[in-house]
Image (cartoon, rainbow, N blue to C red):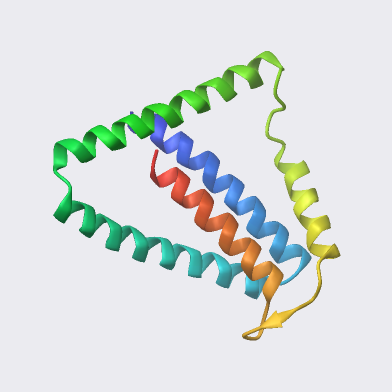
Length: 139
């Protein structure tokens, strides 16, 4: 169980790293890194707040049932995707292609600046990091 969770989280972290690297190389390292840091801080704050609220108002067995059901649903979806990828019916993740796509989109985007940062690089890094990290923490 621990190894499977670690491997699933590793995949998500690699995908988040790919997005941040693409933004850093194409646009602004400063904005990409700030986006990542802010995403992790916001995710930690939300996790602490929601965790405290859930611990106070929801019984432990009910919470375990809900989390277990969600993990089972997500796990079955990942298993389905893995089977489709192994059979060749779904494309395998190509990190080089994802990097190239993100970099091309970054070059094409406007150069708006907010708070002294390249806003596009900040937002894409924030969204990519917060979504990827939150998905891997639920594994």
